[in-house]
Image: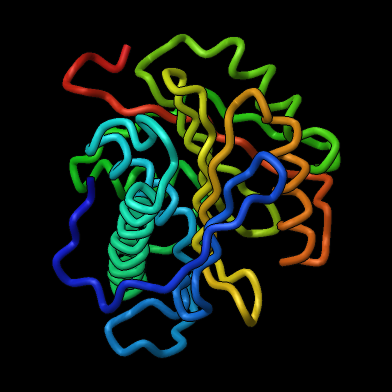
Length: 238
C-alpha cells in the first residue's frame, strides 16, 4: 500500500470497538490543519481534495481490506491518509497561489478536475442531493444507490459533503466492508478518524457516523450530498 517517503511523523492512535464499528482514534495533531513538516496549525480547506486523493491511493494500491482488520492493516490505512493529507494540502496551496479557486472550498467536480490534471482518472457515476436528516437517511441513501451500482470495479468510493466538510467512504463489494476516512480534527483530544465495519452493519455504522458528525459540528444536517466515484483502468469512460 501507500509508502510516502516524507511523512513528518507517524501518529499515535488507539483502536476501539464501538458496537460493530472498529474505530481508529488518532492523535490531535494528525489532521488536515496540523499535519505538516513544521507540525504547526495551518488552516486547511482541502478536505475534498484529500478525500479524492485517498480514494485514488486506495485504488492504486488494490483492495484496502483483504482479511482481518488488525494493527498492521490499520497502520497502512493511517499512512495512506497521511500521504493524502500532505498531497491534498500541497495541491490546494498551489491552486490558491495560482488564484485558481472560485471559493475557499472545492466541490467534487472541481476536485476531480484537479486530479485529472495530475493524470488521476476519476469518474463520477452518480451525485445525489439528500434533503433529509443525516442520522435518519444516510443508510437508506447509500443502500438505494448501491443497489443500482453497475459493478465498475470492486470498490465504490463515496464522498459525503455536509456543512462544508467532505469525508470519504470506501465500500468494497468483495469483503463486504465500509471504511471511513475523515481528515478533520474531531476534538481537542482526537485528530483525524478512520473506521471500518461490515456492510451487513451499515445501519449501525451510519448511526454511529451521524453521532460523530453531530459532536464535531454541533448539528445533524438535513441537507447533504453523496458523490459515487470510480476509477478508470485504461478502459473507455463510456
